[in-house]
Length: 135
Length: 499
Ligand SMILES: Cc1cc2nc3c(=O)[nH]c(=O)nc-3n(C[C@H](O)[C@H](O)[C@H](O)COP(=O)(O)OP(=O)(O)OC[C@H]3O[C@@H](n4cnc5c(N)ncnc54)[C@H](O)[C@@H]3O)c2cc1C
Image: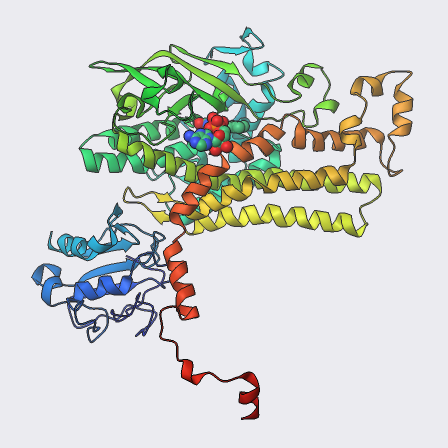
């Protein structure tokens, strides 16, 4: 999927806006799940919290080292190898190049309270992503 | 079939033998009726421009179904660029016709149904999307006009469809058969209905349990058995029967609305796209309204271009074009007009690819577009009337100008800036009248208000999507709400200056 704004950032900040390890291209982290954030100008969901929950470090609040990756814990597992989550704060879906779904296997698109185009309450987003990556 | 020409289109509408009533009479030769013909010319313009190389970049699109070049009005948008070109196409047509050219409602209906039928199938295991895909391909291959029929007469607005004393005020299913359904009811305010080959019907409001018979979407030929049309009056419409072009203001083009009645019309299953799935009425209404609200950021702007031009020419003819307040008013009209365009472009540029693969406008920005459209054309019209002067509504008639005795008097006293022939001054003032309170005002003013939903409908959508919690968090963060107050660090300004 081509994206307008590809950035890989560490999760754990309030809405994912802070403390970026940014670059024009998505940095492939060592772990198996990468997160591509939008720019965060109109977040309707807490993107950082979703990424942190995926990383399994929600309780500690710490960002995983090496960027927005989640290969361990709940989010981990072989089924998720080289998976990508496009994480946009609102339905404009900037992280995924304005697409509400991806044509590529192993990619999940979050756009506000939509996961792959389906309305999903904010608190269920991470679990829904995990489920999709296992399917 | 290749793209139709303007003449082929007009002939194809004549061939339909539609059941049209006007002024209490059935109208047989409707394509040549002087009240109807200008509206037909408007849709014909969508065919004419599609044939001209200098307009094809925006008038044509490539079908994602066949790969063929098609008229953009039958296209399912495949990118944000498509959405932007749609807005530009509508502006162009508004400029060329100075009227509502009617063909966008069907296009917006097709695009809304594309994603809703897909999502309904995903959720309910129905097969609407496949049928709908075949239908869209049929429209594209035959270069047809589809009327987008959403608004029901609605009776008592405080009651849901199934509680109306007369259920016919909402189109509904009266019989389900093995081969299809039978529908009854009416659709009100139908733009371009008598100039269309096909009718695409959608529910008009969100529905709930009990409304199953009313949650129905389907398509049928405009001349299906049991459909008839009662032509809507427009302010000053009978001037078109007077046999002269002067007093009409815009003699060749105009809009059209009709009351469309379904008197037990049979619809084969192949053309049914929703039937009883109440939960999909709401997304269909929202998406159609969203597309249509964005369309107004094009079409009303094109008509606005004509009105700004007309007001400026009137100012020249009155000899006031150089006055600073006139120039400023023209700037203000332009600012309002381009603001609507900016909104139309913005909601298109921020569009998204839906799970069904088509592109949809950003709904919040589309609602903002339409909310502005409920206001700005009124202000532009007010400024145009200011600039034009009172003669636009008090001028003697064309018959007076033509009269041997009275004509020279009219000529003498209606002279403006001396190089301008009086007849031309009268023409431009009649055009301003036509756009601000004549036949075209139906499209430029009241349709701007109610078309695609009354202002409150947009405000509900804006409230729903405004992301207010985020705004509150931004304010709290900057103001320091919730952080401990370090009172001990307080200094008086004087003390800190001394320090
Ligand atoms: C020129 C023109 C062309 C049009 N073309 C088309 C077309 O091609 N296809 C189509 O389907 N439709 C078309 N429409 C219809 C348009 O969408 C409707 O006019 C619009 O939805 C408003 O409906 P209404 O006219 O029945 O007004 P109403 O619904 O009666 O609204 C009048 C007022 O009542 C308020 N109101 C209505 N219901 C409620 C309620 N339940 N609670 C509180 N307040 C309420 C409204 O907000 C508004 O202020 C067109 C309209 C016009 C004027």
